[in-house]
Image 1 (cartoon, helix red, strand yellow):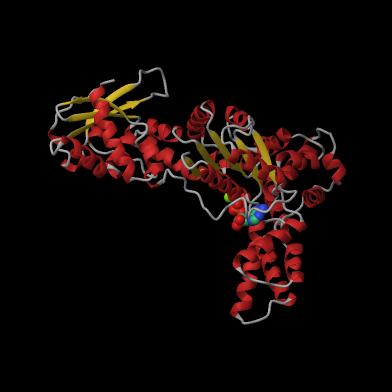
Image 2 (cartoon, rainbow, N blue to C red):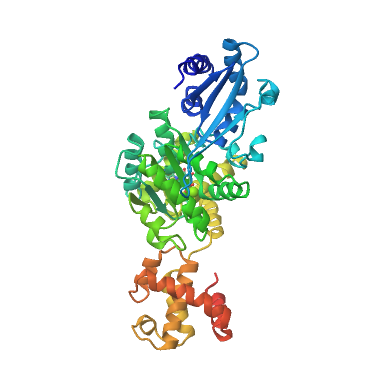
Length: 475
Ligand code: ADP
Ligand code: MG
């Protein structure tokens, strides 16, 4: 490497380092290489177009100050983008662009030959969505381990999370997949891991993102022909947290790009943390190769918390809010709201609100009102037993027949309908539905759901069954 370029750049760096956040310095300046210095013009190599864009957008002023301090008003800066080509066998390519800097580094006057001339490079390209991502984290500091109360229902997941936070990328829990029903703390726990890592390893780049937003960014990147930059952006992250990966179901393009990002991160000892509302075996329309990656590390379930844990969660919440309410009321709420921590918190908040609003004491009778409203509003879940009963009655058979091994067509259909409605109306997994409806496996249930969907669009009589049963089962 050219020694002079290095010296010039080192001087710039020491100035920049003193003037920006250490994290930003590590992320955006440490990866830069000085490659050439001639005629007052310094060429620096950056890892991607996105990187270049980011520097121009956020750090051009400081770059200018640093450079002119050393080289005077005529200083010029040239970016060289070296991009790894993750796809296909093409050679990595290099493109040179002068710092646009709206003229302030005078670089617009400089003629720099563009290899692989690409008109887009003249204009700063923009990846919608990504621009808004603070590479620092997107973490919610209120979601900590400290206020994620431990109980039997979450012990494995919580402790695996702590282990990962102590040694990101350095445990066998990679990826760590946290799964469980709605409102059981997946998002909270995922943030807590990230927050703790940021605390212990401030230099690490942690990024929290929902699978939905990830998908949107990817779609936008494809539209703008920036797929490689999108990939590169994600490949420089040390700890990637993707929430609600079930959202990737059926989205094969996003699954594909995630697969490549995942492999890159995993191979480089980076930590991946995922959450999902289902266990991997129950995820539908997710590619096998991706599912098998999910299973490489640890899948830890968040179950519904037991009574003691619900009480501690409530007490902790009240304590943090500086509110006191009698023990028997806390227990009453904990006893009656069982399946969702978000609802548990919601009920207690609305109880406190009601009491202060109406200047009433928090009494058991007020608690009853609030809880009743809460439970009523949150649709009651039908049980699989109930579904089997309704379906058997409708076809005038008994539940044993419905569950039997026979292949008689009308019985098979009844059984498939029961499985279909169990999937639709309960939160039970495919495996659990199968085991409750005649000890079948999850693939049989999956097949049943598909068959019912197909038949109800092709077979009038069958469609009628589905409609009748839907009415009978609606609550
Ligand atoms: P999910 O992502 O699984 O739907 P969230 O992480 O959004 O659930 O959790 C819902 C609410 O319940 C959040 O306010 C969260 O802080 C709270 N919560 C869940 N589990 C716990 C726990 N073990 N201790 C304290 N709060 C919890
Ligand atoms: Mg969530």
